[in-house]
Length: 81
Image (cartoon, rainbow, N blue to C red; front, side, top):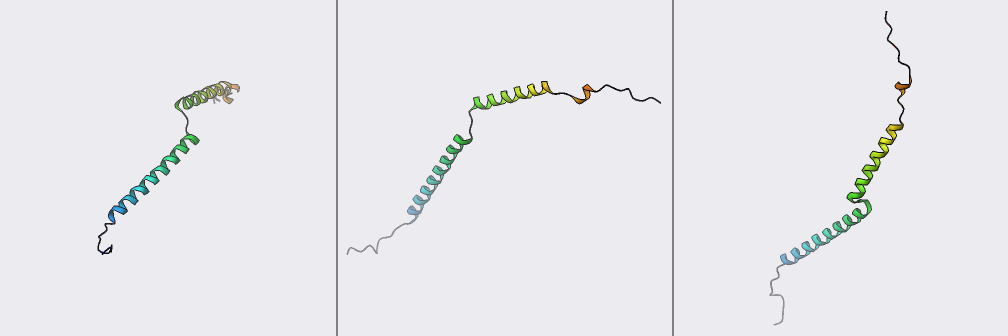
């Protein structure tokens, strides 16, 4: 008799391999998205440092050109009664 009706099949192993495969594909998708985001948004340490130094230089330059309203007005002595 060549019937398969008598063979016992354990489906647990099939479920495990399918779940592991789903995990692998999900991880691959996340890794691909992370790589794309690094290219899109990421900057190297040197670029961040350069930007920080440029911002600081610009801030100092603006502060040097800033005029204070209080310094240009003549000072008054408070009224004494």
